[in-house]
Amino acid sequence: MDASPPIGQPVEPSRLSVRLGQALRRYFVAGLATLLPVLVTVFLVWKIFEFADGLLGDQLGFKIPGLGLLVTVLVILAVGIFSIHLFGRVVLRMIESAILRLPVIRKIYPAVKQLAQFLFGGEDGQPRAFRRVVLVQFPRLGSYSIAFVTNEGDSSVTGHTRRILTLLVPSPPSPFSGPIIFVPQEEVIPLELSVEDALKLVVSGGVVAAPLRAANTSTA
Image 1 (cartoon, rainbow, N blue to C red):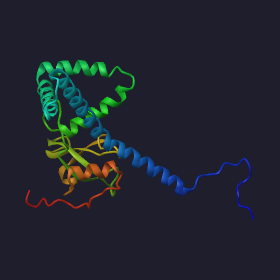
Image 2 (image 1 turned 60 degrees about the vertical axis):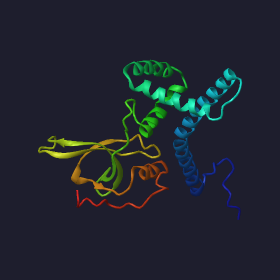
Image 3 (image 1 turned 180 degrees about the horizontal axis):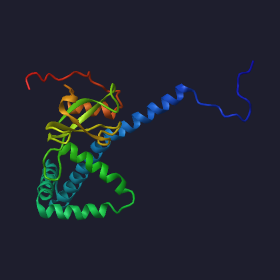
Image 4 (image 1 turned 120 degrees about the horizontal axis):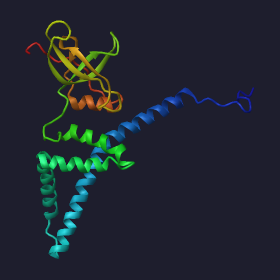
């Protein structure tokens, strides 16, 4: 007998094709999130090098091997020095404000800036990396989530003084978005997992996952 559906009745996609579509979409987003900051950085450095090399070659009438690369490094260092000092910060914020008025760029720029600050440091040149990785019972007791420790300190908000950790629970595929929760230190499980490996786990949606092992805190 012909098992095809009646004419006019929509054919539901198989469960396998739905899962395949979801997996491909997740992998594509994870790949984009991983490649975007790298591509933007490479593109900017290459353009600076291309401009410096071409300009010096036109001015001198001949090219000196390595001169363009040297100028590129000096330009990046100069921008870094400029951005750390007060006057430079004011100028860069004015430029940033103008950029954020552009229709398409304002959607992309904040995410790229956030990722760049995480990878290379903030405006003051200080590193902004997550401190360490822990396992916490979230969103309910009995289920565990990876979390990044972003801050910690003593607080009596729970009734008596305790060490409270500020945790960012990432939402795949972005490791920079998700709920922020405050948990007593004794209620989390420190992991041997490095921040880099935890980032890979989050960005890949759990596909690239290192073994989860509790850190040895007996000597702490």
